[in-house]
Length: 256
Image (cartoon, rainbow, N blue to C red; front, top):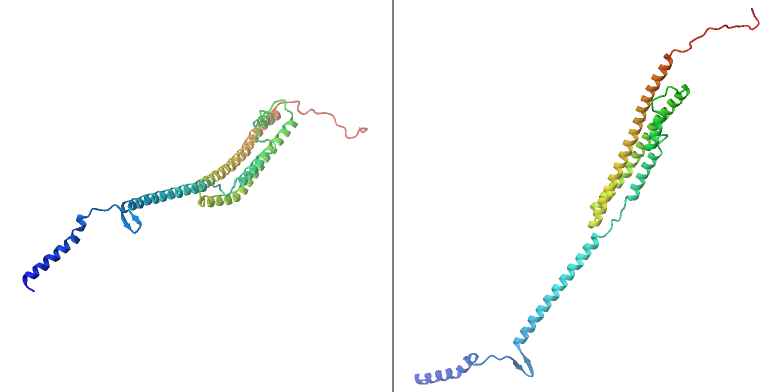
């Protein structure tokens, strides 16, 4: 083939290829494409996909919000759950036992009016006109008061010591409940019961101190009254009286 023929063939090929090469530039973008009888709109499809994605995101947010609310309700239910253990009955029984022992105080009880009456009648200054028989009777009554007070103090001490084992068991149980509490209410209730246990122990301590103080007060009062009575009896012994008067004695009524 000659050079001239080659040039003609190249020019013809270029002319035939030009419409194909420049067709994307010369052709206007279509809004819809037809595939047989089905119409496909790319922009509408993209918009629908974005709308569906937004709706799915909203649904996921709602699901997450519902899960958070459910967890809040679960936590609230856990916080409002009551403690399954209660030591109040045991503590009340211990307090009642100690109160019963204090209420069984012999002779002079823990009553202000009764104490005033007893001290006024048995421990006050001894009158000069009091008979010797009354002095002995009052001394014996004071001694009985002292012995009764000492016995009452020992009984209260024994009762408080008897509460120690119960208190130890209750304290161990409450500490376990407090450590295993699943919510705020259970922890608070366990703490309140521990405080009640401490209050009961302080009540026992007050009872022991009161019983011991009562016993010691009776001992001191008896000593003071005995000293006063001793001075009165000594005064009567040293007071001048009729003394001994000699008289006639007859061993044999009819003898000389």
